[in-house]
Length: 209
Image (spheres, one colour):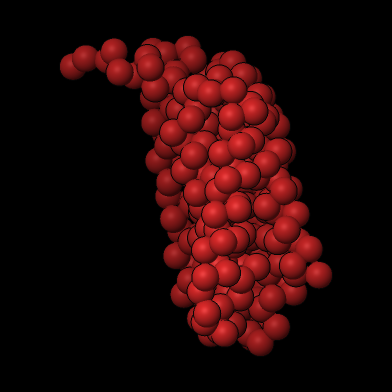
């Protein structure tokens, strides 16, 4: 069942690569949060109940509810247009993300470590690199924030592979990283929203002291 959830998570990356509207990105983030919630429940079978509840609460509250809602609030507050405005076509993005997944599958096959869970490895790296691709291939700063959250989801998947050994340490770091990054970037958007109606990286290149 865990493998099904992880494979579904990988499929959401393909859908995200061809999405044009910011609301679609947010819906995918919510769905990924619930997938990670289920994977957490099924994977961390050896941790204490209190630790498991803490990690699951972190997953459902921050990844599936708080972070997407906060990003949506930033979009509405700053009146950002709802189109993602990628630099490349949807077909090209789909091919790139597909290639990322295929490369990680080949890479995992070349590793002969019996302790390596290849499903976690493939999905974690695919999610991480897809997030990085979204950052470099989209014009709007808000999509860079979304890409960063996708990267964090990849880190979270990788942490689940060792979660039974050190659940609180790994996931507390992920939670604090997400919270701090979104909060700081949210403040950043609130400050520049009065100046830039629809900020993207091309506009920011023209800013001067």
